[in-house]
Length: 89
Image (cartoon, rainbow, N blue to C red; front, side, top):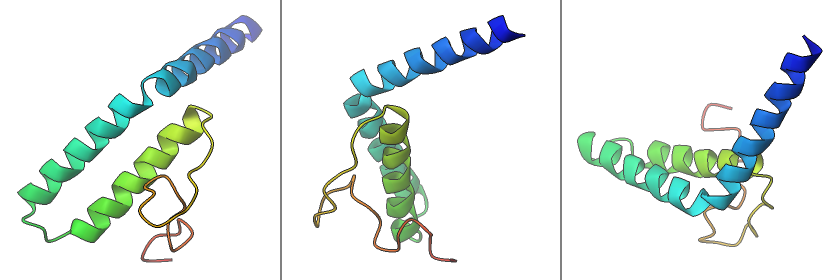
């Protein structure tokens, strides 16, 4: 069992490393998916989709152990204005 835990830790670290190396590609895919969803819903859920893409990018950064964004206006990696609690918090 300890050997299995060790392997799982190694795999997680390798996945984290790969996410860090390819974070730009992952973020591009998240943006593309968000755009496709927004188009399919005819803009009805634009704000929720944008919020979801920001959270997804933050999750990738967390997983890749990348530092958070500056939080400056227009910085998609910065903290959400609601502190990440979502609209129903």
